[in-house]
Image 1 (cartoon, helix red, strand yellow):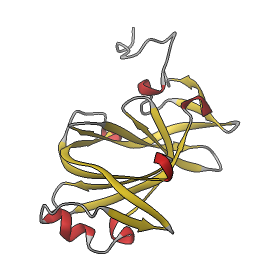
Image 2: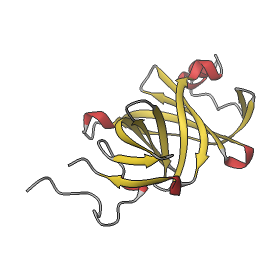
Image 3: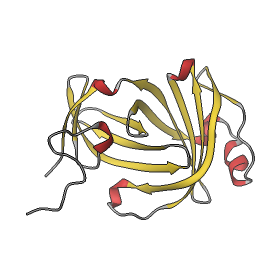
Length: 170
């Protein structure tokens, strides 16, 4: 007998996705091979690497229901001042422009993050600034992991129904 499941195997939902799951998207099957989970006071999200033989992308799942296709970039590419602002506990800029899209700040907070590849509950301190544009269809998260690691996750919302056939790796 294997380890106990933390999801209903007869009704796997997008919120249940984890390392090793297989997921169909755009007529192709991907395996979740890496990821990060971030928990803040008002929201939580997972950014998971979706890996097929010939293509890789990142999927964000926020609060277990909202999904986006995203890419991870250095936060300094969004704005060179971001690392210094976050290290000094400054308020986030009310607006940021990245790749010709103007984002408005819709949330900020301190919380914790963990690396999903380590399969452990080793949580570390994090801060996150959340931005949106185009009626919430474009998302930008600025994440500080620990004291000196800064990352931006930017992407576009997609319908959760665009992802299907969630199969855990047994």
